[in-house]
Image: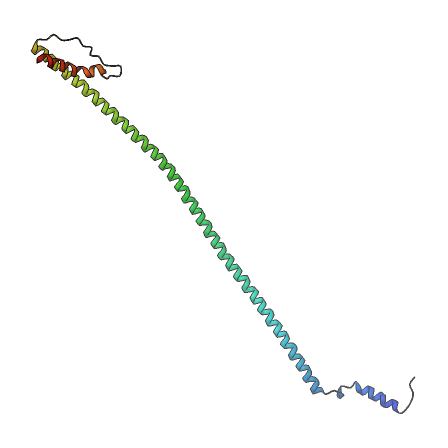
Length: 185
């Protein structure tokens, strides 16, 4: 309980005046609050600037990655085009090689056929020349027989199954010439 002493009201007043705003140095309090506000404001602006820098850096990073991906995509596209062009070129080379191989085969076949035609022509000319020589020789022999009054010898002058003159007939004109020449001497 409270005692009613003369000091008690003084204490009571003191306690009441302790809470009074007039006891506080308002200017100092105001300066302290201002200083706290300035520090808080500097901290907030510093954090905002740091946050803004991070956002800007992230945005730039994203843009750079997008540009690099665009470049990478463009590089990949160009590389793919080059690969496709190279494949087309190789396919064309393969086709050219195939046609060249066919052309080479065709050329070889044509050269072989030309050689065969030439050989056949040469053989035909040779056979015709041999026949002409045999005819001339026969005519010459007849003329010689008539001139020298000789009786003709019977010779078998037949062509072989392939149209060529037999080897016996090939040697006959020369041998008959030599026998005729010996009789003339």
